[in-house]
Length: 221
Image (cartoon, rainbow, N blue to C red; front, side):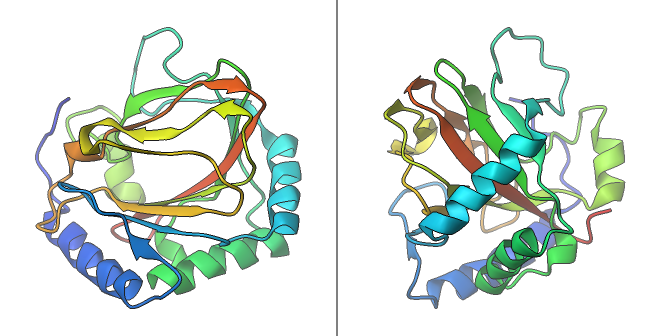
């Protein structure tokens, strides 16, 4: 895995410190006990009705998932995904809830992306941070810089499979409706963290729905 120069190091360290302190003070979330990375989790972030409504929104926009990098590995990311309507009042409510929890301005975040995994579909090992040696980095550095924190909410139970696995950290999470995961894509010192490598394991039975929101180091354009 390539790790190039990190011009956003100071910004990542600052954002990490601010969000870490905010989450540590919130009784609704807890820090997952892992080494070499930071993951927080909380139950009931979204209600059953809210999860159903978000699933409907995902179905309206889902299309074959794309990749930032020029990865030519068959079956690397086989889910369907799409950005849900950010002008919808329901979506804005969920976004504001994430902003209140993390203390991060929504202007620093990407649109909420919904993902749907059918049996056999997966997203193999990857990190959410950007490779600053890749061709796409010149565009992303102008659009808001490096990804700092990732927020992901599971929307339904999956009959079998579909866990989110952080292989280097030795932990995985089974989908549970309304459960929120938050993780820092950098170290406390502000270096992008390769230990946050994770994968959406293949769904074996049923369908898996999640939403993901990525926060940057400055205003996203």
